[in-house]
Image 1 (cartoon, each protein chain N blue to C red):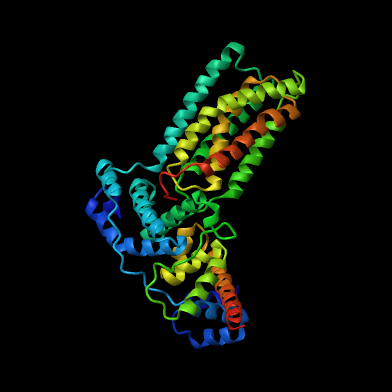
Image 2: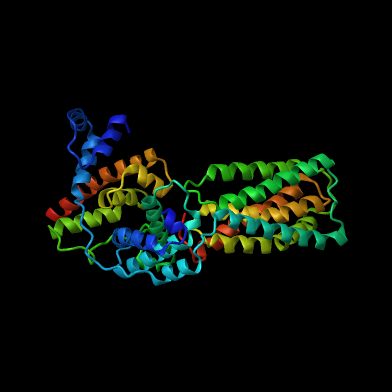
Length: 251
Length: 174
């Protein structure tokens, strides 16, 4: 679309200045545009009486102070922290810090996963109009690759036995965070990118605990049993959220 | 909007009086169902109250409100029975019950049929632009797109409408 075409669009419904009229005469697309516009004569909305929404007035009287969106992010983060602590307590008898990679790598990756947890919660709940699929995809790829490539390389168990154990632990650790995220997600309009971000953010609880706890650091194990279920949780959140009713349609 | 965000019910009343009818008309055009439009209007204003903490200071009210209405209509579409949707699984665009006496019933029907055949991504900018009188910057704000993306969609949509109308006229005449 040329700058002239864009100006024609802006001038629709008004008399076109001579230079734009000349452009329309020479541009087939703009002729089609103007004819399409003219074909749609605006129809005045009928004089209907829309009932004052009583529930909205009740809601306003009951909650005169609005809840800022960041408070919901803090609530979700609070739930994640509490559930991470519970998960850590549950894993302590088996040994919480069994990752044999260098401590700097373990700490760095843990920080990255924590950032994914916080960032995912913000993307899921912040009132953003433009949903950044690119940002969600890039961050997911960075975290996934870092976790897979940042392992100790040590294979402790057989692939299948290790995979089943870690997947089960991952799902158990992430179930309640995912539930919390889905509850929060219903408080704003459905958007697939929000749902995926929420699922990944909730899955980061399981990913973080497995990252420090699991002694198996082979790339195959990390990809299939740590990162795989994490990605799966993103998809699961999307699937479940798309079927849940929405409490609030604000963007 | 600031007073409304602080819980002032008179400010809510003022917003409701100003936007209730246009929002109802917009929802009726999007859903094709007066009953659904009534219900979705109520949901839109209820969401506005519940979600006013998500309103960003300095933003415009109208695009925000239309974004809520569009989201409510999409949500309605997602939970609707499949037989009530268009072949593309999108919102139908029928306004037959809501409109006053048509200028030309045949033309009116042709326009509605043509609108129905547009993909939702082109139809919403056109309905907001042509019927709701919104500028492209406002539509972009409402749809969460860039202004140029909205213009491209509207440009293609209007051009496609003209093609569809020509085809429908040929069918009628033939």
